[in-house]
Length: 214
Image 1 (cartoon, rainbow, N blue to C red):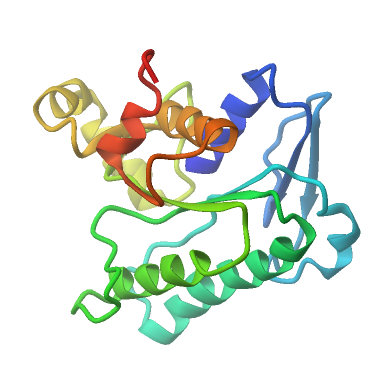
Image 2 (cartoon, one colour; image 1 turned 90 degrees about the vertical axis):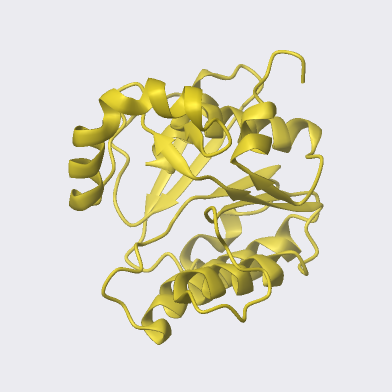
């Protein structure tokens, strides 16, 4: 869902000249500046490695829900997958900005009781040690899908169908926890172009990056 949002903003931004999408399924869009590779294992980029150099930014939006998963399996599809991609990209793109989407409540200490938060925290910490120009962690809370974007996770789609009419109320009462797919996409582009005030951005920080005064 976040990936759909940032892709939309990249396609709309005149400053973006080329977009390369790598995923497990097609995004189902065609555009003059869009190239797509569908790979069965996105952790293995060897088949397209010669096309991965010279990019300004990577917006890493892949992820799964931890529901029903043990820690070893969740770590494999979260930490191992992300670091495999990052280790491939870093030496090819020393000037790259790497943006990683985690979530509100991520545990940077890696010692808390919440499994997904520990694994996400370990992933963040490892990414921040890699030789990118900059690595920035996005920790959104509630994300409202916009412009027809939907989640690929059935339970999330159901939850959004039930709660989306409450979004204006959420945004007014708890702005520190609420953002949208459009705001996240625009904030990622801002970070790629101008940098970020810090390496870990919570929801309020993400929304500030899209304010007219930024």
